[in-house]
Structures are given as structure tokens and as C-alpha cells.
Length: 194
Image 1 (cartoon, one colour):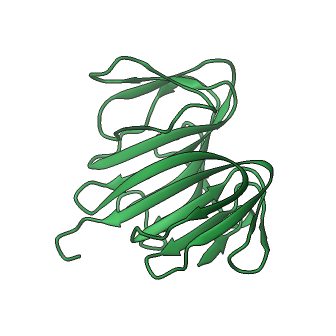
Image 2: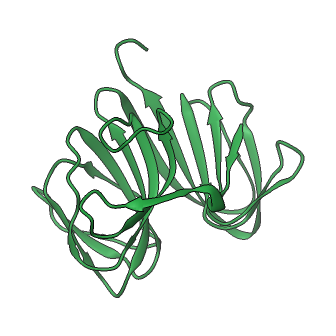
């Protein structure tokens, strides 16, 4: 089990230059946008417009803060995404544009390279204690609001901190401080050499 602190996340420009993204975690470590197997990040979206295209990438988007956005994904009806919506998955290589509903938003973005890794993202509202099983190759627990880790005797998780588990990690027990919100991201290696 590793804890990634929000203060240590790396801020970088978007691929299309239209804003900034905060990288939470990437694999392999230090991989650039063309070489990652998976990447978890947050972005501040300040204007409506097209999304960057990522060839061979599957994405899941969740709104963390702000009124929300309407995503226009080629071949689909427009999808309205707010802070209370379930995460939305779509291919990163189809034309996609976003319209802000009412001002800037911050989103959580999970990207995996097709044929190498797949992912599932769950949004959980928690009051009290919860347990996360480490059944995937990599499981990330992204805490939107504050939590205490019960498993390790009480480490505090600040807002936007992340716990990283692998298959060998013990199950993670968390206790929310008031009404808590977490995203559980499960990543599995699908490459043939697995």
C-alpha cells in the first residue's frame, strides 16, 4: 500500500494546450502521453470546446467540482455529467467536445491503453466505514473528502489524496470524516504477456 499526497501531484499542460492537468499516477512511472499503459489525472476545464484525441485509449470521466458539462461524443446522444453523476466511459479516439453547464469544472480522468490495460471506475458516497478489496492488478482509491485509513492504524487521507494497492495488498479499510466521497479505480493488465 502506498499513499500519494495531493501536494505531490504533477501539473502539466493539456495535450491540446487548452488548459492544465494534474497527474495523480501513471504507469509505467514517468511515462509520457504517448507511452503510458494507464494514467489517472484531474483537469480544470474553464471553457467549452473539443477534447484532446488519444489514439487507442479508453477514458472514464467524472466531475469533481463545478456545475458539470455536457459531453458530445461522436455516435452517441449528448451526455450530461455532474458531480453527482456516475463516471462516464468513452473511447479517447473519437471526436468529443464538452460544453460547460455553468462555469469551470474540475474532472477526474482515467485513461488506459486498449490491448494493454482495462479499467473500471466506481463513485462511492460513504458515511462511516468501508472496505476496498485489492482484487485488481492495481487499485487506486481517490479520496475526494477526508478519510482515515483504519488498515494501517490511522493514517489520515486529506482531500484528493490517493491510496494505491496491488493484488498482494491487504484489503483497505477506511473511515470517513462525516459524509465522504471516494472513487475506486481498478486497473487490470490485459497484455498477452501477462
